[in-house]
Amino acid sequence: QPINRRSCATHTAHPSSFRSTERDLLATYCCRRSRKMCGILAVLGCADDTQGKRVRVLELSRRLKHRGPDWSGMHQVGDCYLSHQRLAIIDPASGDQPLYNEDKSIVVTVNGEIYNHEQLRAQLSSHTFRTGSDCEVIAHLYEEHGENFIDMLDGVFSFVLLDTRDNSFIAARDAIGVTPLYIGWGIDGSVWISSEVKGLNDDCEHFEIFPPGHLYSSKQGGFKRWYNPPWFSEVIPSVPYDPLALRKAFEKAVIKRLMTDVPFGVLLSGGLDSSLVAAVTVRHLAGTKAAKRWGTKLHSFCVGLEGSPDLKAAKEVANYLGTMHHEFTFTVQDGIDAIEDVIYHTETYDVTTIRASTPMFLMSRKIKSLGVKMVISGEGSDEIFGGYLYFHKAPNKEELHRETCQKIKALHQYDCLRANKATSAWGLEARVPFLDKEFINEAMSIDPEWKMIRPDLGRIEKWMLRKAFDDEEQPFLPKHILYRQKEQFSDGVGYSWIDGLKAHAESNVTDKMMSNAKFIYPHNTPTTKEAYCYRMIFERFFPQNSAILTVPGGPSVACSTAKAVEWDAQWSGNLDPSGRAALGVHLSAYEQEHLPATIMAGTSKKPRMIEVAAPGVAIES
Image (cartoon, rainbow, N blue to C red; front, side):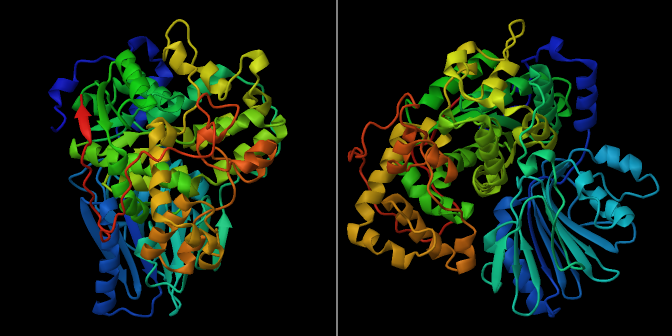
């Protein structure tokens, strides 16, 4: 059933949690209009301005329609095309793209949101704005500063800007890569830029990931990194730990993401990160525009197999916070049946990503069916604070810090990709406050000694974050939730999920196939039958070599980098991205290599489909 607006207006956030500065933040961030998560495709300088080319670009843009099911737009200037598929979260009745400056000489198509656009508009008082969009400031900032304005933007974004005065263009991607973006080159000299691989892979001679924190300029003929924070050099920081400063920075990051004109909620697994997101949202929801329109009763969503760790923990947190909780269950077979669609939408063959994306993909469909179009999620915390269980083996603070830096830099290929594409497959937007640019700077400036896991001092993984929200007078969460051991999402939904995937792969990939894997797949050669299975599906959808190169590889244990595998000798013989592969750390670690063969496995031979049935998914409110 659609969410009832009136029935959601009974819960009141904690009034004592509001300080004057926080009320100011709420007023600033919750009265704006913006474009939100969408799909963009730009074809620039293709030497073809015919109707046939326009039809082709429109055809390719429709491959991104799942990202923006509400409206589409196209702007053509000669042989340059900017197309857009819109997901309307703010001001749904108006404000379609592309966006323009006063005389329409500057054209912009954007996927994302700019949180500080009110401040930027104040600096652009001599300009006339055509819409209330937060993203329109991009066109006017370009007029004032040329290409040197990207670091002025506080938000998540991917955009293409065309200057029709000289037919030059720039494209840019947000600091961490929360929004996906790819760039390709055609044999005719054209440059292609797309939110997803499927928008350009059939028409480009070569394509690749558009690197986060970078600008591409047609005038310069290449990339330039605009994002240069202190932590990026991986120099060891030494700022003392201030728990209240860290808490305030995260609360500010959540408040920024509370602007919406449509029903929204939080993804709640019951782990530390999602529980903190929910707790902070509950405290600050009252007083927002969203609360006035939809009520102050926050909706929370969780997915898992029957009896999974996450379902139990999430329900407890939801009861404590007083949210309207929605619990979705799925079976192992439901997940296996969805794998092909998950790989098509996430555009990866990375094992960890697919394991975690599948439950999220199924959950997103159910969330969207309830009328919800935006959710707030907890991605990024483990990378920033060293939360994965393999960090228990970090030999010193220097190596721990370098590992966290590498993990953040790679997020766009893993958790950012999953959170964005698994939700966008159903026209749902996911916002990630832990990856706020200001919050990352705060957390990564602290002496990493405070991130070291020290059982002798009672410090478990992410102790620094847990301590910041350990408030005795006004508790954010129950103690046992605040100090719950880390569960990776693909584990927390139910341990038999990964076991079932392995059993399914075992029955569909033979030993002979594995013996030839290095010849069939010389790049990122699959080392397990599960990985081989995913690779076969991926290359059926995306056979180009460029597509294969967009996916990361290398040995990993419990989501580590290849370098961190060296931290413990026994890990090299148990390379699995599951948290349970952290032998001697996870409370339910693998005891042996063989897995139960009790899961009935079948082969999915259906053709590629954008929609997927998920029998057995149930909702409890």
